[in-house]
Length: 267
Length: 267
Image (cartoon, rainbow over all chains, first blue to last red; front, top):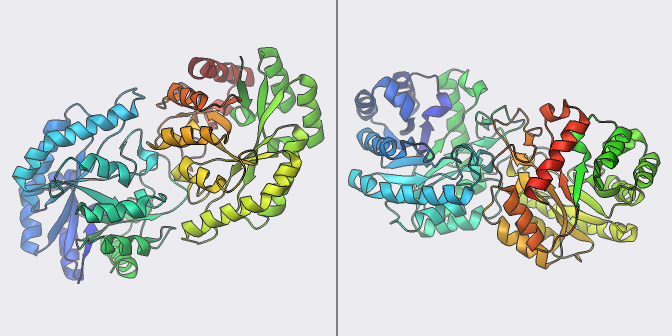
């Protein structure tokens, strides 16, 4: 069974209509979309495009950024956009420390409260909030949720069909506790998304665009795919890479390499 | 009581004799030294210089790098150098994944074995091995020991006066488990060194030279200093920063700012 999904960020400069055509032509069943790119194309137009192509939308990236002032309205919009696109999964990058704050516990409490406030909207829209722990190098400016253990703690007060977790190998591979947390996430039925990317060095300035295509780095991707499957996850496996060198290559070529990575490590 | 120590890496381009004179003149009681700089100056000459100036050597950086072929001989030399310099603390940066390996568990096992092999040499020389967990962004290429919890596990089989841990705020601040691990490290008598640095963004390419002077970033340094003190640690507090902007400034000015950071957050 083909559970591969191309996350749009991997081929950031591939226009959406060409990307959709390329996925259909390659036999790819699903795509992961990003709000900015969808908005630039037009939300309803994008929804029609993927639906008529017969593609599933495995997830929408991203809600979250709860350190920003307009987090509530912005996340409500994100939930609506996910519903319009026909995906049941909104990935949350929860945000960093606000302003000059040094209060990481406070930031984490705020995220818990913000997610609690959004649950009714998400349930009403049939969309699950997928808390994504980000690598600790993003802790100050993008996401104070740095481990799967923390993500599960934040999810715990809510039903599993309302709040899940997004597992991304790039963010989690260094953590020796991740295997028991994957098992736990599976037992709770909270694995909402699974993303593959490899860790390569040296990291670029700003570190955001340092992800590698599966197979180019040092992450034991097969171990992750096996653990996630053993935990009961049967959803799509997104390949999600941000890297200037990958973005500068032709979309179909990157799609083929991403798909090959999925087949090698996670099929 | 003045427990401040200037780690030499903070003022990397300040010649050692000037650094020592600057510390004496500022009333600084201790310095943390680096092997490369000591070797360039001359080991015996450096030992005489600091001893005659009345400075303590709070630690020597660094042993470790156990993924390299010559780790055993190299670390035995590092132990001897620490003893010659009159410090009882050799900081270990344990090394990353060897070659093209994806076997992080194997790398961690190798580090445990390597440290076990060095314990007799360290004890004979009166030097304690201080395992330093590094931030997870260094996991692949510099140190697969990414949390204080892991460092304590590796130290566990050995007496606390032979194998301790080095706590560095820059590497540990993101970890919500660090507080219980600091308590545990204190109960075991394993806190061998404590280093202050702040987290600032954006990170530079390669990420090694991204550390900030205390007070310039988002780490709750006072909470760390309080926790480490409450755990029974009474040794020196090193300020250790690597940053091109800091290195390009005059040594005495950086020393003054580092010392002020110590007084503000950890005195």
